[in-house]
Length: 196
Image (tube, rainbow, N blue to C red; front, side, top):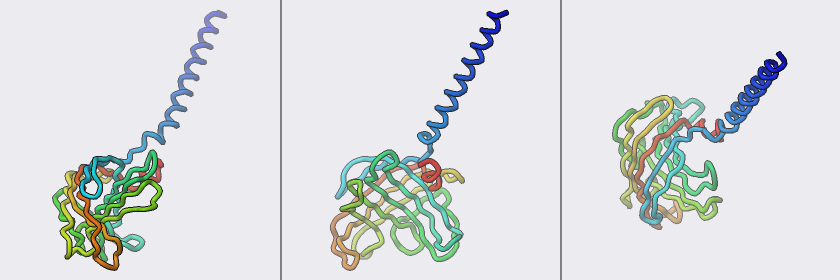
């Protein structure tokens, strides 16, 4: 009888330890397992190479609280210094529908998609900025956004665009270009704040 009680006690102790260790590891891993989407891309021109990072979409097409916009936001820095951030977005002065699967022009013109790219050493000093919205008539910029699938929790597709860098937005003194092409699976922007 005593031996049987010892066995029950050992089984109960082992089960409690197992449950405690599982629940503890889950709470630790909830932070690490956050879904930040993903982007992989190649860049050429002033910057060269391949990179990857997080991908988000942010949607306020109803103008709730002011601005009307739909943005795809790509960045690194989730687990270290932020060295790049770029966006593909559509901005309007009135309500519009979020994009559905299809091919969209990126050209910086009103109501179309626009693109901007920032590269930094990690502390935002000496940040290089490129855009298709400045001096667009003087330089060939823009490209294409392909949205393959859309749901409430993710947007996936690809992009290819060229943006130009300028030393001052008051003139059109061109510093150079970068061309960026890649694939993405974006999740809601709120995920960054829920898990980060």
